[in-house]
Image (cartoon, rainbow, N blue to C red; front, top):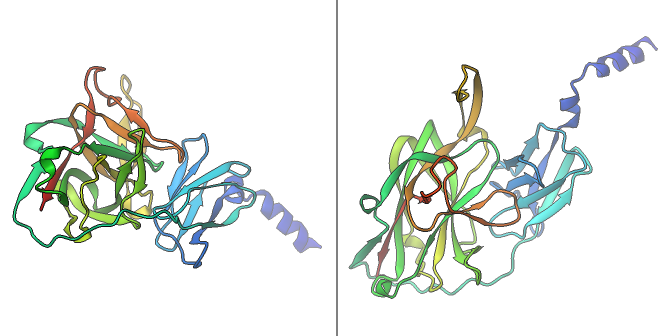
Length: 295
């Protein structure tokens, strides 16, 4: 009897946030295999996370009764009400057909578009503060690209405050409305960047991707995983109050451009952001990405 009372009082002192933690795994509905790097949002809230290599994820916040939105390349998006602390979420593989890609072994000429030195590099950066999001840059197709119709490589300005960091690089078709749509590649293209500020190059030549006639998007998707996390001291503007804030690496430099980035941060829709939040209203900011085409 005394042991039962002791257990009861012990439970009274268990932190409520620990009891309310929600976690689980994300798996392929067809094969049961875990799905790494799936991004998970809480509907209508600035909360999200990413599944790790074993498909596991965890929320410290009390989100019971709310709706989770889960997205992963090659799978249908899923919305699910959180009814328990331990979840097993199964995603259905997409069945849409991709355009046939014809390989051309010749690599004789190259064309570089959106070269960095021809654009005005912006000092601020696009970064992730703890909720996963995706930003995308649109590349319009021009008839002058016909002699070099294949994607060869791309370069971007990255800033990394950890020894290394990883992100998901996505190549996406444009739909009839001109918005980012289906992924050109069926799987994640995980890119690892080194510490510091540098130009990171990604080789695309092995995929033999022809430039879509409707144009396409290059998107970067942050992964909210432990190995990408760094902390920094932040002082609020106009005060001496300091706080420790989280950043998930890497960050990406922007350029002044005519288009503006596309943003996906709620698990539902894409929106075009015509200006950076830290710039005057007349400045339009896009991702600093340089694309090399070949024949």
